[in-house]
Amino acid sequence: MEHQVLINICAIFGVATLVIVICKFLKIRYIIGYLITGVFLSPNTSSLFTKMEEVEIYAEIGIILLLFSVGLEFSFTNLKRIKNYVLIGGTSQVFLTIILTAALIWLMVRPSAQESIFWGFLYALSSTAIVIKVLQDRNKVNTPHGKFILAVLLFQDIMIVPLMLFTPILAGAGNSPGMALLWLLGKLILMGGIAFLLAKYIIPYFLKTIMKIQSQEVFLIATVFIVTGIALVTEKMGLSLALGAFIAGLIIAETDYNRMAISCFLPFRYVFMSFFFISMGMLLDYKIFLTDFPWIIFWFFFALMVKAIAGIMAARIMKIEWKTALAVGFSIAQIGEFSFVLAQSGLEYELISMNNYQIFLAVSILLMSVTPFIVGNAEKIHPTLIGLLNKKNNTPKEPIHE
Image (tube, rainbow, N blue to C red):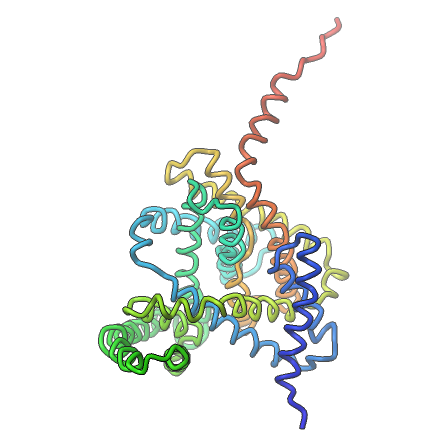
């Protein structure tokens, strides 16, 4: 009997181990190794995964687990400390990016307004996983630009939920936009009520009962049950599995057992992330680099500059000095991991074509590849620019010969 699922998992993590060892030797970030692994194992590259549906299932599992871990570490106490950065800075960054992207793409390419706005959705999100990891590695989380970046990324992680829910409405799926928004609002209110009841009464009592057994293994199993159960409830309501996983993380984070849940799941966090990034790499068709390489380069620099400008403007709105604002803008100037999920939704609702989807994946992977270098040197951008300007201004002019 052939155990295909086991063979697939063995292949995924076997190739990932080899690639990451090579990446470590070459001083390349592990997330880039995951993406490269995915490209190697893609149905477009190898014959191991013959059906793209298999890859999409793995990607969905990865995003569910990733969103749960994000919700689990969501702290309202930490949020209060940087609430102005989150609410004003985060809102400014997201909406400035959407507006700038949508306006420029509409002026250059002339797609429909819905498609232009959707591209703004995709560009609005940055990579929490990569940026935070680099900041932590370099002990820069508590720097002025690190705190602002953390706030913006936190707001983006929250915004993924309404952006995902608004995508089908943007595509005109179902009823009129007004009715669709009201129906969506109604479902969100209902889900909020269910989440409140679960968080206030049911989940704490359930976990308290489980803890009487005094078994970490049983607690872990019970937590997985809660995550999958809430995710399935949200799907039945016409929302999304990922939203349910995020809500499950929030609920457990607010209980007395949040530290134990984090300690149980923290060792698995990088497994969740690897699963997600590998599956995203598997969706990329490497042939797009051969057929559309000039467009990939163009959109690479377009995304980099638009996102940097929006980030700088958001920081300046908060009256942050130019040095920090430049560091913030360029540090978040990449496409986020949750944008991949939005892109798949846009593909489903025909807001982007398959070719543009592949170009988007290629651009995203390239931007993620250069992000560690940019974030690591973000504080040097302002001094470098000042030095170049001073050098230009101090250059002696040639005498005018009459």
